[in-house]
Image (cartoon, rainbow, N blue to C red; front, side):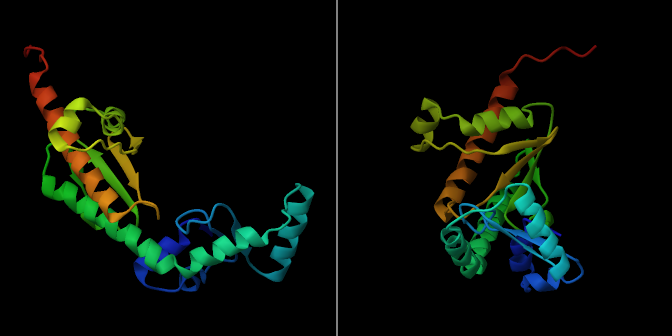
Length: 204
């Protein structure tokens, strides 16, 4: 099992990680995704598998001295996983609910699909594209500052031809989430206004 998101899944379902991984022969767990450690991962499996993994790691030049520093960060991340990841999941849900309440013709959301810290936002219509929407969310304008009193830059990822992905991590606070929601509302409103003012080709 690729356990990059194992802890997110366990926290979201309210179960121990072992319950999810019980049907797998081996599992990797990344400490820098969600748990907040600067680096590090652990590999688990049967004794023969782990022994072979050690051999291959040395063969490829892997290894690190003074690994206890990284291990300490990983241990802290594991201790705080339920609280940290639970907060990420809650913030993602709040952001998704904000999009749903906004009821913009440009954006839609499947609330049932928001289970962890990832939110997939559907971008509807021919304009703006996901890439253009992300550019507008990242940019800060004088108009935004004058109208909202805030200068907020939101970094989202154009995920597909009609989808944008938003991901929460431990450094994104409740207030950050609310500011991001307001920025998305501002951008959606301005995008609709710009679209209404754009010249349209006459019907043929």
